[in-house]
Every structure is written in C-alpha cells, then in structure tokens.
Length: 171
Image (cartoon, rainbow, N blue to C red; front, side, top):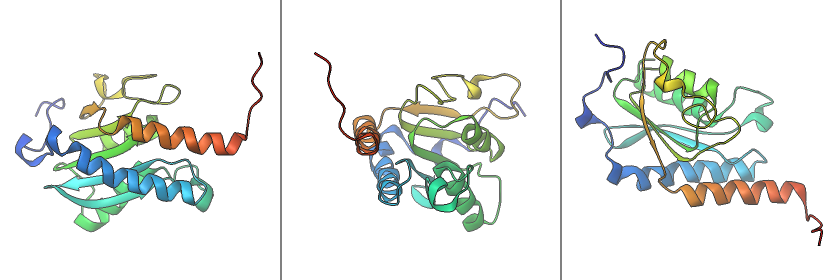
C-alpha cells in the first residue's frame, strides 16, 4: 500500500462544509483550557461526523509537558474506539500542531488534520516544518486550515495579553 494514501475512504471523512461546526467543538475545549490557566488550544477527533475524543491543553494543570490538546484527544478517541489506528477519523485543532502532535497524528494513522490558525513559532505542518509532506514518514495525513481562524487567534491574543498585563506604548 502507498503510505502517502489515506487509509480511510474519502466518504468517511468530514467535508470542508463541516469544518466550522466541528471547529466550534475544538474552540469550546480551548476556552476550557484558558479558564484553567492553560494556553487555549482545543482539539476533537471526529468519526463519521461524531466527536469520539476531546482534548484541551492541560500542561499547567497536570504538570505534564506532553499534555497537549491533540495528544489528549487522540488518547480519548483510541480508548473510546478500542484501537490505536484511527484510520477513519479526523483531528480538529484550534492551532497548527507542533512536531510532537503532528507525529502523534502520523502514528495514529489519522488521514485528515484540520486546524484553525497557523502557529508561526512551533507549527509543524506549514509554518516551521512540513512534517506531513516529508517523504520519510510512514503515513502522510492530508490537512487544511482556516475554519474559525479569527476566533482561534483572538483566544490566544486575549490569553497572552491577560498574562502580560498592560504595556507602555513608546511615542
């Protein structure tokens, strides 16, 4: 089998028209992360149009550097489905996945990742590296972005502004 080909049939994956509704689910998780003092990133795993796994950043809450939204959503989905190969699922996340989370999607055999906003410093799909396009990987998920981009960006802006406090403007 060609490793660049998705394992799931295209008919089982969410369509672009579903992205805003499903990203709203991920944004709900991101808001919960912010309320708990974590960077507001949320994620859901979707199978046949239904959420089968949810995650939100919990690094601060759990004192765990690997407690990223995507990792937690993938774990919950795998447990719910009773298998680690998530070949018929899509991963939705509010911010472009980092290398760890992109690697987890590859290892879980996720055929599609949808993210809201690019992450210029750590994004591993298009911003800093293009991990899904690397010919050396065992599986190369498809990806797209932009659904609810402004809402995801605004959550991050507000979160970090609240942590920094007011800044003096030089004039």
